[in-house]
Image 1: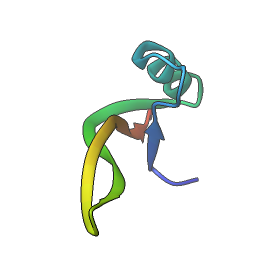
Image 2: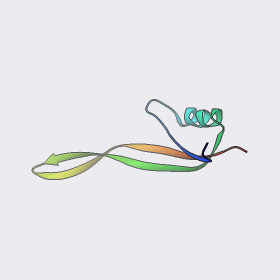
Image 3: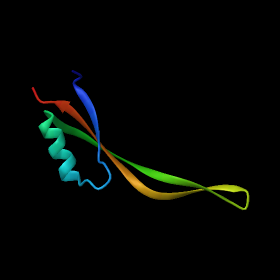
Length: 64
């Protein structure tokens, strides 16, 4: 079993639900990362990236 694991906040899941899921698996959060999610569109032959959301990832370590 690895000591570090990443937990992604799924669609239709709150941050609290993700943290509870981490706790059930025996992990405690040590880092929170947020990344934008973009959609690629071609307008008049040019690519344009439009933000459509945000991805939240928690990094957790195993509770000793």
